[in-house]
Amino acid sequence: MRSFIPREIETLWTLFTAPVVWAFHFVVCYVVMAIACAKGSGSIEGLMGLRLFLGGFTLFCLLLIVGSAYLAWRQWGFGTDTPPHDAPTRQERQLFQGFATLLLSGLSFISVVFVALPLLFIPACMP
Image (cartoon, rainbow, N blue to C red; front, side, top):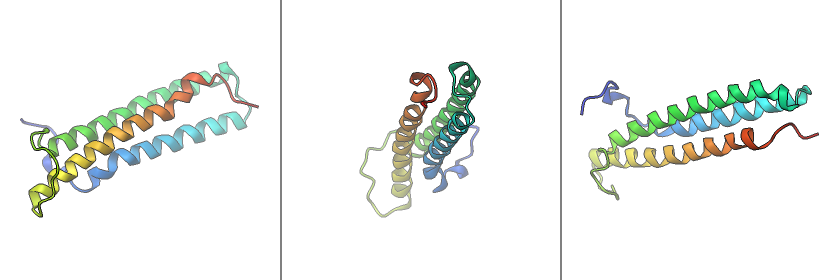
């Protein structure tokens, strides 16, 4: 299968991509809303622009995590080799890293969705 992304990009850093995206999303969402609520623009109308911005930012972060998951799935061999990958070889380490990255990407995806849920359910800042 031919890909536009070179295989050299699959390093140990790909393991940390999805959790870093989740952490960045978490900080941005809560800091932006905390500043908006502290400034007193906590009405439903005042927060609509911020909600749209954070909704778009959430979709962007989810796309980054899906991209990370794709790289992990490719590194894992598209799921052809089943775990455990515990042999002391370079190939097995790479398969293990791909599988671990795929699991972290799934966890990070769910975490970003849960961080974004208050945007939908909390109508305004609480006094």
